[in-house]
Length: 517
Image (cartoon, rainbow, N blue to C red; front, top):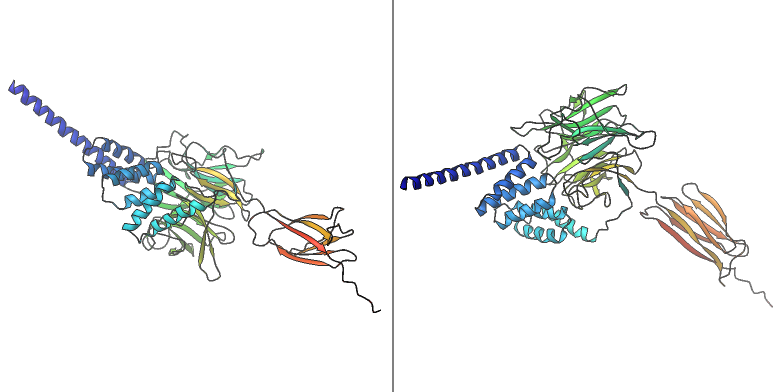
């Protein structure tokens, strides 16, 4: 009996030891996955370890790592919940509260985000990220969620996986290249960072029905089976395709490089890696200037302001010169990514730290007369509480395509078209005399700084109405026989909304001279 009892004790101890070893193995695998960037897999492994753990401190540590995984893979609701548990179990990482506030803001839960920012700033008052995060919440409470841009999801280009970062090829804007994580191809492996397919480059063209064709993947050598290819940008002449290439290794983190390939006779050639400066850089998200002499890119190299910054490099012979950081007006302690340069030199980029709506917002940077960058948020509906990034314009027109994860609980990105309708201005009013009577034969002569010259005869009811042009200075003269002329100046310049300029003109007769008796 004693021997049987001793045997049971030994078996129980063995099970405990094996169970502990099994738990340690899960945690070891979770940490390894986290370290090499396999966040989707790491989150699941930490979740399993958490469910079997009883030590509150360790549960808090697992919760923090789960929060990190969910945050990086764009699942703000899950991230906020995980960070909340880490704080509840008193895990001593201050960043947990900051990231919880960020996640609440990104999930649109401002009432929960604001007190968390305030609590965090009591402990770390100098953290610029938290200051701007709180400022963003205050702005969002008053910011209208409607704007003048009209946006629409492009069904023909999107899949159930992430589709993002578009680039137009040529100046007809009927050929687009974009990144996609769709997994229709059996050759494609699953990306353990996102849980979707690896990123590849796809293209689509406007067909005879004036619709985007079914997207097609580029063949080798542009897309490689075990490589993430994405964030494309095309030179203004449509002959060079720049994009980011990330190689995969399941034992260690891998960097990113920018490659370029040329088009000749309608075919794209072999991609070639770009060497920037004298040292080896981790670079991504290329954006070539319209003149082809400046390349903007993203890097977390030393000399930046924290996180990922936007840099630029200029042509130097056959290669590229030493990189230059765009400075603190553009870059913040957070992440600035997905640069895009327009013909007028304005820079568009995404940031998660400039005051915005939540997640990544799209910003516009313009250089002022003193050579300094002035940055403005593009506002709603281009920006939302989710990630908004990767914008591309149709030349000088205020229309194009951008990426957004709005409306997706899984953080899936989709492509949206946008267009800014032209402003509508109108001049209207009436022409009467002092007795509120219609002045017969009255007319209006309108002169504009754009060369407009119009004469408008007032109809029988004395009213007038005429369409106007934006960014134009006007003067109009109202006259009628036997009445004093009236002159009015106004301008549509600087107006940002539709407007009807209304003027009710009262014509007066000249004073009658009293003759001497």
